Picture 1 (tube, rainbow, N blue to C red):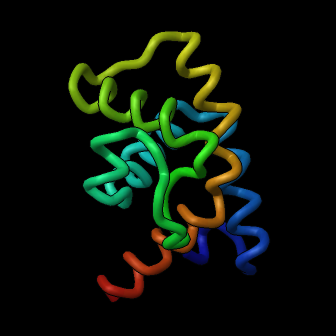
Picture 2: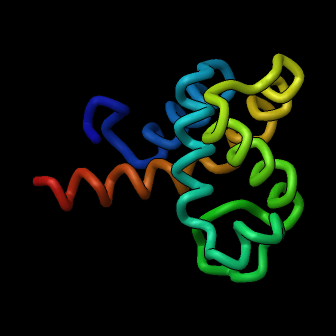
Length: 107
């Protein structure tokens, strides 16, 4: 994770900026967070468990819908992407932590 900054704070800031402007980052983050939703959350599009991973209750419905659409058809509309870029930066810390865990597992 060193390439994203020396400190966790710097890494989170980098993730936040990338999620705001980079479609690939925002879409990948969307899919990763959706994968961490429980089966019940995926089925209903709502957030029930406060497990520290996944969408907030406010974002659960719309971002789950976006994730399902992206997985099934490989694209989102411009309007959906605009919404995604506005909502994904709040998940920068979660995504950074998930990436760090993945790196630790591989190493």
